[in-house]
Image (cartoon, rainbow, N blue to C red; front, side, top):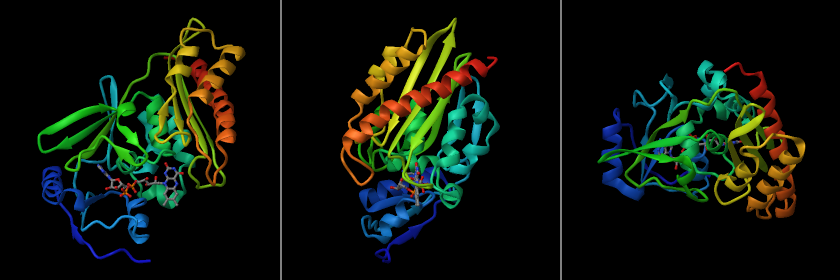
Length: 291
Ligand SMILES: Cc1cc2nc3c(=O)[nH]c(=O)nc-3n(C[C@H](O)[C@H](O)[C@H](O)COP(=O)(O)OP(=O)(O)OC[C@H]3O[C@@H](n4cnc5c(N)ncnc54)[C@H](O)[C@@H]3O)c2cc1C
């Protein structure tokens, strides 16, 4: 199918894009990598009157290290996260995710901001960034506001973004010393969205787990922080019985539904299995780190 006809505009500054959003409101859609928007338009599940292309605005992409943070511009492509030296050094789980997100064609075009703004409950970036304590910067006519990612997702495909705002960047705090992270994704086939995904990050000091963060994907209306499960492990020695208890707590916190990828019961059981895998990977890496 072909999309309904639409007007195409290509602003050259963020301010111009925000002005256009203010002018057209809900009739407009921002275009980033187009990997979710264009298929929706072709299926006529989205029929914006105006498409505002972000691709010619300078300064929206790139990965920068500053002080205690690393920032990722919203127009940074998926493939750039796989290859970035600062990201590989501080957040190895992003490399895990980038290598198995969709396929090379999608990774070359799709963007971090598009992925978060689209708010698919199974998005790999949403799940992994939740485990890294990310915040997002949203820019509108009155300036920028910073929102923790765990309060950004409101419902399936729904976020805290106002119709006249765009997401400009993601901020990741640098991890504490001896931090490790890991990502475990169950999918039906290569290139598929997650049936169940778990991202884990923790630090180990004197044999005790701290800063435990768990992100779950594909098992609730939104990507989810498993905060109760995090508390089960926080401050304890990460022995196998404690990891198993944490995994069961994460499974209890998930809110999966039956769909083509599997029954709710199957997905809940897989949350436990994949939580243990992601935590085990994170623990291995925390021991491997020097600082
Ligand atoms: C075959 C296929 C397989 C895929 N598999 C996976 C997968 O395994 N895992 C995964 O995580 N994803 C997967 N995806 C989705 C892919 O990651 C998309 O790139 C992503 O969801 C959307 O990013 P985009 O840059 O293409 O955004 P677009 O499609 O351009 O936009 C998506 C939505 O976000 C809005 N938007 C875009 N940028 C901004 C911004 N800066 N501020 C505010 N709103 C904005 C748009 O208006 C639109 O509503 C897959 C896609 C395809 C086509």
